[in-house]
Length: 57
Image 1 (cartoon, helix red, strand yellow):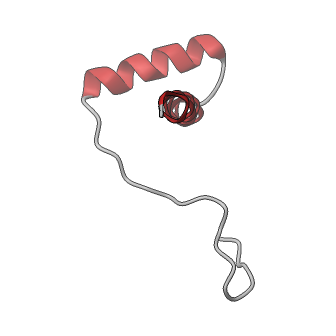
Image 2 (image 1 turned 90 degrees about the horizontal axis):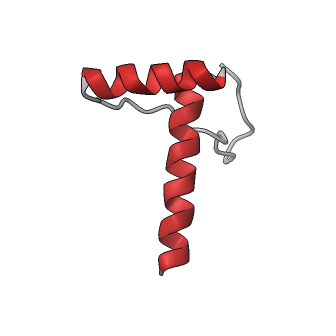
């Protein structure tokens, strides 16, 4: 684990997320087609949705 200076937050935060098995399997298939890790694909999808929501406000 990387240690940061006191008062400096790590740039990312690890979380636990429960997904339906079928959804996870589909994400893995899609990620495999794009040749990226499925966690990275989830981050891309979340970033796109956040951007969409911000634009709608």
